[in-house]
Amino acid sequence: MKNFCKTFGMVVLVSLIVFSFAACNNAARGGSLTITGIPPEYNGKYAIAFGGVEDTYTSLIAAVNIRYDMNNFSLSGTAGQIRNGSVTIKLWEPKEDGSTVGFSGSGMAFFEVLIVNTATLNDTTMSDERNFLSEGEVEAVLTNGSGRGVFEDWGWF
Image 1 (cartoon, rainbow, N blue to C red):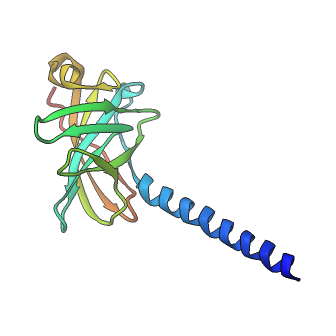
Image 2: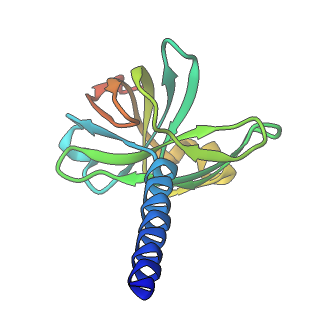
């Protein structure tokens, strides 16, 4: 009986640890933004979005991965590839210390969307006008960090 209690206790403890890690990883991953309605000529190109949540003034960046240095206004990362007129990209919340964390909040969000030629995001590609194909906007209701919206093309580039 003593061995059964020890074994049962160990199973419970290990289960708690595993579930705790799983819960932490899901929260750390954050959500994503799905943008639909992108014109077909941009299939195979890439998208990145900058915006925020209206009520909380939370800044957001939508990209596959991102590093944003707020002190030097420097950006590096990867844009999401557009397929069949849509793209799903992770939502990141930049922090004052220069880090970014996966966003998992909720609210009405507005984004400026940039359609670009290259997936690579850095100071060089983001300052090269030839990299930019189109610009538009997306409105999305975010729930637990995720939402979707329809691209409105401004066509400024």
